[in-house]
Amino acid sequence: MEPDSSIFEETISDINILHLSHSNILIFNFSSSLTIFQNETITTSYDFYRHLTEIIVYKYICLTIFVIGVIGNLLSVLVFSRASLRHRSCAIYFLALAITDIASLFASFIDTVLPSYNNVSLTIKYLFICKLNPLMVYFTTYLSNFLLAVASIDRAVSIQCPLKSKQFCRARIAIYIIMTMLFALLIINSHIFWGFEIIDEQSQRICLPSKTKIVYYNHPNSLTYDRFYAILDSLDMLFAVLIPFIVMLICNIIILIRVITSRRSIATVLSTTVQSKKSRKRYEKERQLTVMLLGSAAGAFIYII
Image (cartoon, rainbow, N blue to C red; front, side, top):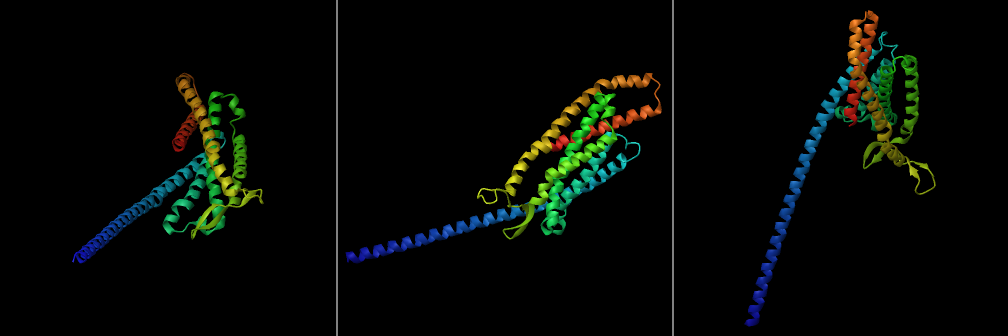
């Protein structure tokens, strides 16, 4: 009887172990299912709030910025294209800056705001727009920053050296400088039009820099365009942002010092000397251009920082 009882006890213990193991498996499966469900809930909630944020930002905030920016720059075009301002070099720079900013706003509109309304990005639908839009974004950003830098130099020279400034601060020279910058920056950024293409990646069409080899075609470690673009993009901060920022900062410090120190003397001269209406209007326009430049530079500083 003892062997039978031992066999019975072993059988009972095996059954208990079996039930215990099944219970553990059930508990583990339940906890795993609960964890997966919680993760899916968190992910779903995150995706919902992310989608809601994108709608608010792109559909409403970016659209508002676009509308206000276009209207403001169109008004600037109307103001600075008047006959009374067309002969002033600083007004020419501001006119070019307003046109450049309008082009920049439309380039950003195509890439950010428009897809949020029709769920179709033109940059992945048409190859020409895929190449042109990033070129316009870079080109207008470069040109806008350098126009502000050159306008700052123009104001600093005209205020610091009012007599000698007539040789430099002229509308014709301003047009030449703008055309030179325009062609130079187009040439510098022309590689974008050649290098961008529509790529099918993970069943999605994306407008990206191509992986075409541009140096040492038969070498396994040849430089591809996407690597070349990444290198240039890292240098973008130095060329398109830092250099204009330093120029604007130095020039605007000079302008502010000069304006503060000469404000009282100018007021005294205007009050004691019989000035013609033409001289007073000229001084007032110069002052308005200087204030506008300082405001634009302050906005650029905030944007850069």
